[in-house]
Image (cartoon, rainbow, N blue to C red; front, top):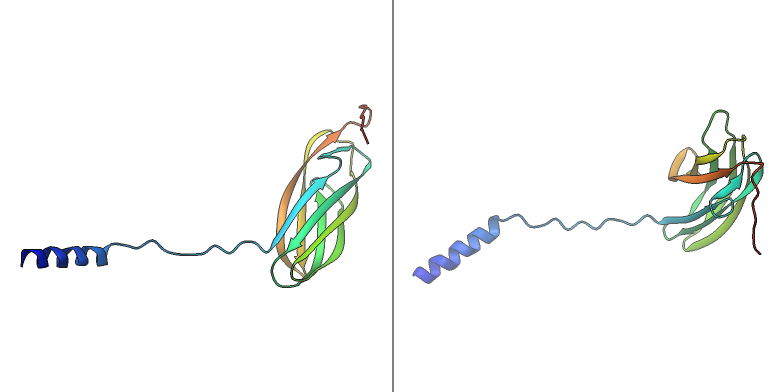
Length: 138
């Protein structure tokens, strides 16, 4: 009888204990890698490329990808993009620096479908002064 009560008590305690919730976080179907300028740096007041490698593992997306430097009166550069299921694309946006500001800057990269924002990210850049010498190796 004692053994039966112990087993019954153990079952009762187990049934009243909270069980961990099993939620599966859904991964973002849109992934991207952004390389602004030349390894994150660009010459202030000049054109520079923003290379975006974008992939879609979810439903088809037809929208616009936008890049905007933060600051007063900053322009937005955009390009339409179609991302079917399992798409993997690389696009390059030519961007003109809006001023001769030097140092760390930020920009907003946004993927929109109509008025709906699908994905957005803050991109960090480094503006090099127009009089500073820059060397590159090919």
